Length: 313
Length: 267
Image (cartoon, rainbow over all chains, first blue to last red):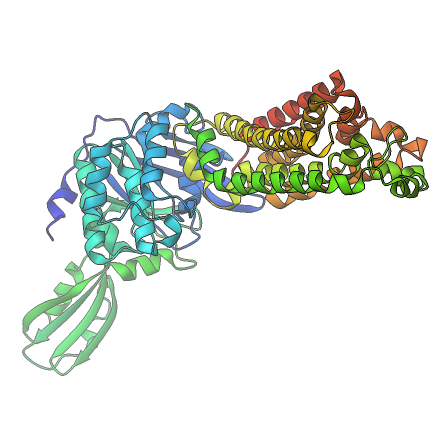
């Protein structure tokens, strides 16, 4: 994959995290929306923040921006409490999950207004973003399609070249071309040492830009790993072709093999984690001719992590 | 400077224009209708025969009949219609200022910018005062300009019309401050509307009933209706307490609402 090189690039170790939560907990009455959540995003790093709807992603983001106060633990951006100095927010770009503005307001009006609030409008940057996202900024928000509304949200999040980007389900409603351009904007930001927290409920879009993935379920962080580490833990499907007829019993007792089927000379197996033991078992079969990977099933890993009752380490 | 305040004014300018035209139209209608009422003794006698409580509720006082300029404008405008119009405008805007914007999902986006919650509250309250001041000026100017044309200036100086208009605006500002305070501290727009509108209607009823029921007078003393209208500003102009009390109470409510807003979770 073309992004694997970037993904493997280690984050600079000496820099302090731009976004950090430590034991962050938020309770609403008896409901615990976020529980003991600790995660860090360093400058230049894109962290994918994944979880099913209602897992606590948006609550975490609202805690980071200071809209909610933690019940315990802490959240900080650029070393400061979000509820403290409001000038800090000049360095934050934020796209809410449900981006809405006054329906009568045009994109241009919003960009000028927010520019003024942030200490001046960068017209050149706004113009570039508008062009790259193919947005008509002169039309009132209320007359725009879902995708075009989202583009206004993206421009206002990027227009002041912030040091921290917090994006809540940012590509909602974007068509594939614009989505690619948007991911390019995220990549460029990371190259300029911007810290990006990118929330989503689906993996593929995040996988293309994120160095690390944080997975949250029912308010708990259930995994924090690079995409490759997640792949190592994912379920692999392998198709094995032998010189002679083969039986599923060949794989009985091989560690990690969770499914085995055989038809004539072809066996199909599913392996969780390392495939070594399964291959050793296959070598005892009637002449292994070929191994074909049916792909890494990250979606299945996510199903397992998201699913009820199964805790992943 | 004041980018939050200016945004409210930009957003509300068309609505404020329509409100202004409505106020001008109503004041003009009132003025044009006066010559048909003036000198109609039968009307005066009819109303003089009503119970004092009803007369008070209509804005009539013993000193001026319905057909005199003071009695006419007070009973047809300053004691009911104008405060009601100002109240609807100001309470609606105040309930939107924090709670309505919050419920609409647009307040958080603003607060992700480098502006403090205190600044947003202060500038939104400032915008409310500014827009209410525009309506006050438009309404007062219309009557001051039209009164001499129709003879409503006999025994009624222009500054008294201004004083009565300002009194109505201050009354509306006080209940708007209630709506602002409730909305800013709870984030609930409907609660803000309900509390402030209930208090405003209750105050109006008490003000009318207290003329007959002396037992209600201690309650009436705490009512913005009484602060604004009790001293008959159309006849006597504004007294100290008729502008200082509403301003002080409004300011306290705005500050309280902003202080709670700065510390609570957004909804």
